[in-house]
Structures are given as C-alpha cells and as structure tokens.
Image (cartoon, rainbow, N blue to C red; front, side, top):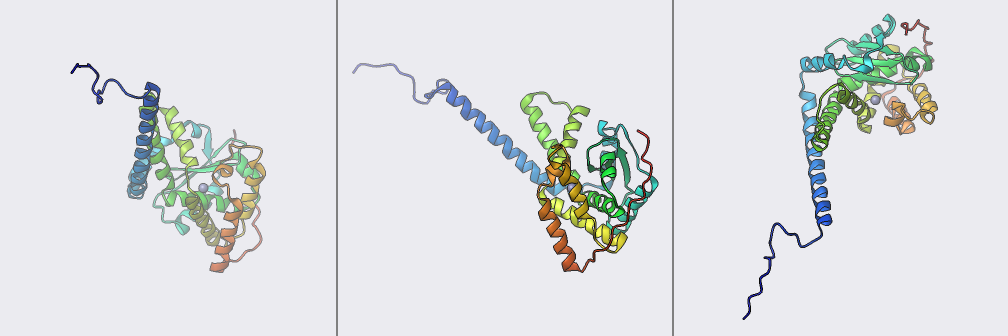
Length: 273
Ligand SMILES: [Zn+2]
C-alpha cells in the first residue's frame, strides 16, 4: 500500500474553511463576548448603584463639577434654590443639599448630576410660565437623584467606555471621555425610571401647591421643540409623552390629587451670561 502524505484533519494552523469566514466568526464571537460582559456588568452596576454611599456620590459629584458642561453654569436665583430645597426636604429622602445651576443655552433642557446638582438651561426657564412647571421639573430631576438613576447610568456608561477603549485601544479617562459619559448618563434612563421620576415630580407638586396641575404644560414645551431640535433631551428620552401624561392623570385620580390654576412664574432676572 502506497503512503500518501497528507495534513491531519485537525491541523490547527490550516483551516478547512476560508480565512474570511474565520475572521467573521472570530469577530462575531468577540462581539458576543463583549455584549455579554456589558449586560452582565450592567446588572452588577444596577445592583451596586443603590449601595454607593452618599459620601462617594458627593465625591463623584465634585469630580463631575469640573465638567465642561458646567463651565458657564451660574447659580440659580434664590427663589429657585429655595423651591428645590423645599421639595428635597419635604418630598424626598435625599440627605444632602441640592444646588441648582443655570446654563446659558437656548435648548429646552434640564438634567441632574451625582451629588445633588441640577442644571436648568436658560431655554427651559424662558419656555415655562408657572411655578408649578418649575416645581415639576425640579421634582422630576430630584426623583432621578433620589432613585440614584444617574449613578446607574454613569456605571453603565463607564462599562461601555472601558469596553470600547479595550476594543479601540484608545483608553483614556480624560475630560473628553467624561463628556461622553455625561451624554450617556442623560440618554440611558429607562421608561420605568422616567415614570418613577414623573411620579416624584407629581408628589413635589402636591407637597408645594396641594394640587398637581403643571406636567402637561411642561410636556407641551418639549413637544413643540421635539421636531425642530433632535438634541432636545426630553424628546429623546421621553418619547411617549402622551402615555406619561395619561399615567400622571390616572395616578392623580387614583390618589384624589386635585387640579387647580397654575401659579404664574414671577420673572426673576437670570444670571448674566
Ligand atoms: Zn428624566
């Protein structure tokens, strides 16, 4: 019998398929592993976020206070600070004082950062017409702080950043990356988190005014802007406005929360640009 030399079937160096197919397979596997890690770490972050101490949150807040998005933010007028503090002490269990800043920005926007920092744009203050709307917005953002939503989002953002820097080999944790993180913070709130923040806003209205008129007016400002400015965060993160208004109406009915006239916003001079 004649011996015919041939390569063993299981030669690890020579693949029986095409190299391109193998590369695709490898990339798919690597992506699947990354997605798996992201989901697993995401769950871990969700479980850990409520356990982060308030001291740690305040340090994160101080660190993020240097973020460029806050560079031109000025402390809000006294009446806005006082309204935020009234809501915090009477309607939430947040143990540290909150600080409201105003950012010169025509966008209609509001967001919260770790450590009790709430930022309102000059655009949102120009759009709203009542103290009730202001209280609902502050109550909503305080709700995110009380529920530690931003810490969850920040954690998930960190996981995503770390993974993407692993892939792209451009790992750095400088201000630019922190910037991306803040954007992620603002975008990754789930519908459930928004619903609970809305409920916190409604509770704030009940506490301050004894009735819950206001959210519908707030949502109408965002709805008006939604199609002209796709960056408007409420339009991005709050896509089901009608469902949210409906939910608050049902909740008011179930709890016997009344509706009354809005209290006009006393125009206060905004801090100089
Ligand atoms: Zn929100």
